[in-house]
Length: 326
Length: 79
Image (tube, rainbow over all chains, first blue to last red; front, side, top):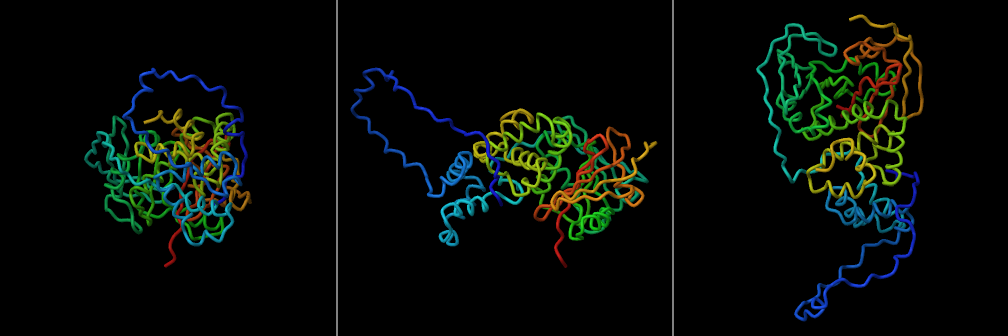
């Protein structure tokens, strides 16, 4: 993981603190004699390598050091590890950041269980010739209603898949659990009976056959899930949150990552100073999708406030775009 | 559903390797060459692949720059 090298305006401008104001406390408050003052707070955490980083990154690092989130825990553990001691102070912090910032935004452990929204799954309707991706077959089609939103779910009627596949229950639970702004992007989910037939073309075009399609999200709101990979449900949910992050950002900010809204995001990203994930560094669009996943996946959890403190620029934009603070 | 004419080629971009190649649409599977936007068929003219760690994403775009779909691929364990 590289620390984002883009520089931004200073977080804190220099200046004198100004004249001291006279105390407004009443005189009798000063006379309280039985009060035992609290011990002074411990000195702020510091590190000899801190000065090597930009002010934004210093803010990030000190916030990270004091936090309780998964990211903070990984940071402190890395700094305390024996391998770090031999490094220069700057590289010690870089090792901590590398350990802290994930390869990919992953669901934060949920210590606060949200009340699931009201939902209802219809009985199956049999469609004799349903067009799946790469196959036409009889299908059972359901309608899931969540908070007034209707989502169609299709699965092969014979229940046969080309490898492992998520269940109908997986899909229902994930959609119910999905953050509302992400769910609003989805109109249908199809449990595809066959692997993505395009994988062979992708392997040939991009020179590696090691990847298999897991999910396609159409801008029209159609989600297709392919065998043979079955992820844990929280990762399935995070994947949907990430992919729908592309859909909303491009729909609202314009396509291709250019325009004033995208420029504002770049400025916010610069002021935050550090990437959300390694994968998020791969492009501006992925940075938005990863930040969206972090924002929505941690919302309602204690870690949300910490991530807001770590990424104030990005989260301020997401507050405006995705419905404000919890 | 009637399709509009396809421009004839698709540019495949590897954003990670920073390479691209242009392929005649006749050599591309139909399901890659076409997508749907607003319920209407639309020609795919650009696909961008972004690889990071154990995942790769493929973003398909229309001629007017609109995103048509994203496909998430996962690295498969070797048998």
